[in-house]
View 1 (tube, rainbow, N blue to C red):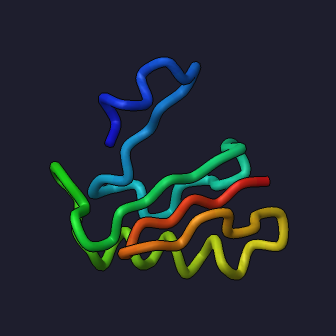
View 2: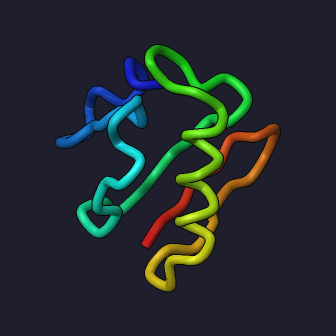
Length: 72
């Protein structure tokens, strides 16, 4: 998905080592649990989805086929 988002000012990948990333730095978070991509896992992506669902500042905008888009 990252190549399709390169027009954004900031793009960060949900890869190994980002499990504890500060979600407050983002306005939108896009995750693909079913197809996590390079250097990521479904469990890492699902962990971030779980965190975002509990985060009061974020709301789900899209949830389809294990793809999630959260926004502030």
